[in-house]
Length: 475
Image (tube, rainbow, N blue to C red; front, side, top):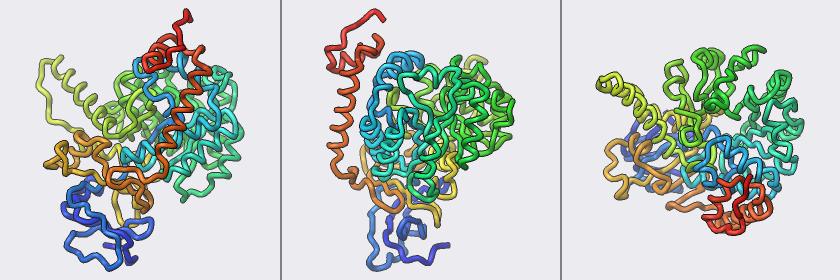
């Protein structure tokens, strides 16, 4: 079946991966912002239709990053050798309270362009740097300027009173969320809105009830981060049980991380119609433990994937997909070895992981009817992976090529809502160098003005990159 709309663009001759279906030598026809047909490449393209040559490409849906902190782009790599508490105390509490609105804009825009460059067309931007209404406005403006499809999820500030917001907090969610909801009221826009709730164990009971009910009043999907089940820092406080006490387990809620929940908590999420967003790379690197993949699947939950923060790890979904499957298979194999048994055939495949990075991510964000797969009537959020390279040729297994072999360098074209935003391997955004210069200037200002507050581990990292004035201290 196809739409009767006349196509304006035809992606021609590629191996089309619609979701789990693989269609060699097919075309994807686009009219305006939507996919109107998927058909064999022998079909004649109407006159006047732009043709994109995809004969040496995999044509796939844009990747979905279901949880990211784009404002942390400025802090890239600063915490890669730090555990989570060190990140919070040595970097986040030192530099972040000084962020100006222009710093938020610079980081968010650069981070959004990074996503596009990596073939990620949709992101949930969980923003806990909203130290003023101007910070929030800068964050939204950067997302809108980027051309990315984004769900803006405002949370609490990370200002000079951060501990009052993030530790047994008696402070309710900032009321500015009402104004932001009016700004982002169009559910069909590229930038929409969710509610970034702090993790249940980080706020007092009255605050949990207030915040959850505020989200419902504003008709916003809740995405709760802040260490849900994150190692001993979160998982032993039974955050899902805390919500159940007051009947706050609502359909559509997204729970981030979930590494070490109790077995009944995974079932509670499933039975309430909730979702899990995992960040396998970041979680393993900062000490949260192994990803929740197997626990979630055993409970009947299909998790979405996310990158979390480039403060720790790379910001692309290709690496995230590889880490997810490597962690799962490595754990299963190690346990079999401990039992002196061989490994049984894999039940979780590369196709399952690809779904987590596409359709399941879209479902978690409430966008599953719009994006996440290549289907007639869905938005034309499309990525081409160039397989005509020493890295990927021959592309014998398209799904494995995507999930285990490809890198951002293989993304040749990105289309969002029918508009090409990366072509021939290069971003189309004007003045990318200026965006990067602004990002680096922001970093320089933050480190030079606030560097005395950094912990020694963070100082050592920055000294190695050229900030010689950051002498070691005793704190």
